[in-house]
Length: 131
Image 1 (cartoon, rainbow, N blue to C red):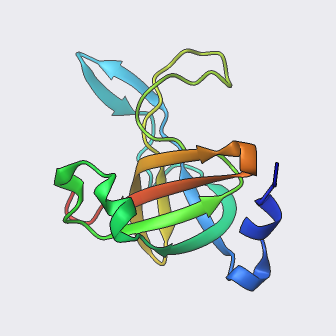
Image 2 (tube, rainbow, N blue to C red; image 1 turned 120 degrees about the vertical axis):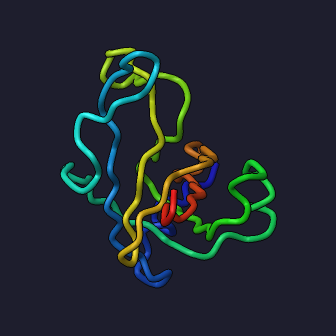
């Protein structure tokens, strides 16, 4: 099996710094309430390759998100999308989509393809302006 993590982190591919805001909070009366909004939260700093999403990647998004600007991120670290629970911390709290700050804009992760057997994750995110 080929591990592509060195390729994803290669400076030849213009690796960039990404600030990832991981959601934390709880449900109150059926609605998710963030413990701290992204502007106040401490981001995780990760590195990855960023490029405009291809038509094929955009087709994987729900129809309502296809009209927004979409960016694809290739990272070695896992990025979260809404669904499932946080197995890593054992809390069992629901996972909420990460938000990624890139080039001054905030993007919400809509799709994550796990290629962890090959050493990387592919995440498609849409710009949050006007959300």
